[in-house]
Structures are given as C-alpha cells and as structure tokens.
Length: 213
Ligand code: CDP
Image (cartoon, rainbow, N blue to C red; front, top):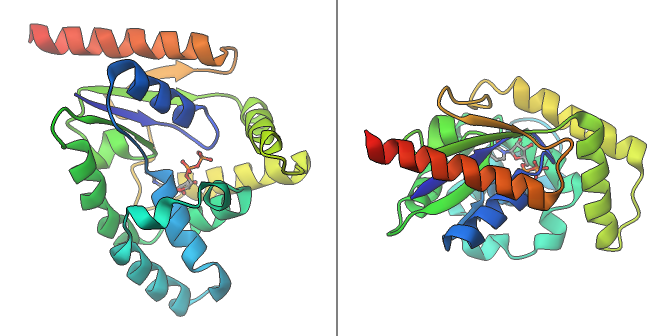
C-alpha cells in the first residue's frame, strides 16, 4: 500500500505520515529531507549559475547517508535553502526516481512532501492533503524547535514559513496542489491523536473503496 501525504510547511504532514507508517507497519520517507539536504549542501554559494549547477550535482549524488544530520536539516534555515533548490527542474527530476523506488518497495510505504500525490506517486492507494492555518503552523514549528533547545524568534519564523509557502506556490516545476483524488484534512483544531485518527479513517475508507472497484 502506498500512502501519499502532502501539504504546506509545518501543516503536520510529517507527524501524520510517521503515525500512519507506525499504524500500518510501513516504512516512511520524509521527502522534504531530500530537498533540505541538497539545499544545505549548497548553502554557501549565494545566487546564480554556480548555485544551480552544484545543486543539481548534489541532487544526483544524494543517498541515505546525506539524510542523517536531522537536527541541522530540520532547522528553519535549511528549510529556506530547500525551497530554493526545489524550484530547479533538474533537482526535482534527479530525486524523483529515488522517491518512486522507495514507494514501490515490496509492501509499499508512506511518503510525505508537496508533490507525492500529484507527481511522484499519482498511483498511490490513499492520498491526503494536510492543511492548517498559518499561525497554527508557525506555533507548531516553534514548539518543535524549542523542544530541541533552540531559541525561536516567532516573528522571523512566521516570515520564513510565509516566504517558503510563497516560493512553493509559485514553483513552476512542482505539483504543489491538492491532487484531484486527495482527501483534505484541516488539522488547525486537531491535536496529534485526533488528526491521526482522522487520517487512519480516510486511508481505511480509500483502501476499502479501491477494493470494491
Ligand atoms: O516540514 P516542512 O513542511 O517545513 O518542510 P519540508 O517538507 O521538509 O520541505 C522543505 C522544502 O522542500 C519545501 O518548502 C519545498 O520547497 C521542498 N519540497 C519539495 O519541493 N517537494 C517535496 N516533495 C518536499 C519538499
């Protein structure tokens, strides 16, 4: 079974995808980490052709070994670099097969990101599109970072998330919208347990409906 979980920054999709993976006993890939690792690899290159060329090289060379420094990769700063490399078509293309291979391993997988249900796995068995309002998303991300001992400037974080949302929405190479057959889940007023219960109900129903066809 392949489950696609998409949505904007800090919408709760990562936590939900991890919860779904545990619930169904499936492996989980946070595809944002791939973009974060590539973005982080070229963080010192400023703007321009060098940035783009090196990002493409980094994307082609990416493997699981580059995804280990979770604390650095999940920082707000790495998120901004991720959204900058994510607009490069060759970067997206270089990482597509890696994501598809992960999804199509025996038994399937849960993948979360921005374009899983639209581009990476249009054939997924269940697709969820997770949303939450901007303030709730900022507050969740702030608490996540604070729980790791980081000092958070909420004003700056809010703007980083908005900047990333704006760049993601304008990405000409991304399928950053809700797939036609995806189920919308608004987690603004749901805690983690309630959101996971709702997500499991959606997946169970999608799978049951597919079995009827
Ligand atoms: O967890 P959060 O939503 O903050 O970020 P993420 O999922 O780690 O993604 C970081 C950035 O990578 C996003 O803002 C996108 O620009 C990019 N991304 C993408 O282009 N396609 C994906 N499938 C996943 C992430």
